[in-house]
Length: 39
Image 1 (cartoon, helix red, strand yellow):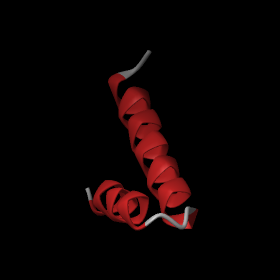
Image 2 (cartoon, one colour):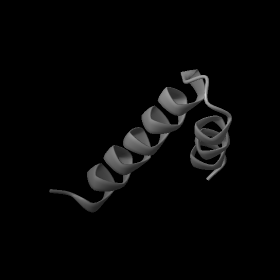
Image 3 (cartoon, one colour):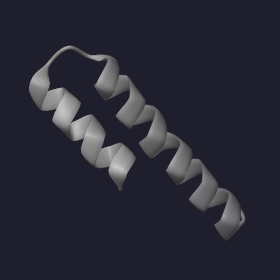
C-alpha cells in the first residue's frame, strides 16, 4: 500500500466520520464532528 494512498484513505475516513457526526443531532457528536472536519 502506497503511503500517499494510505494518507488519502485516512483523510477520507476522517472526513466521512466528521460529516456523519455533524449529521447526528447530539451536540457532543456535532462538536466532535467539527473537530474531525477542522483537523
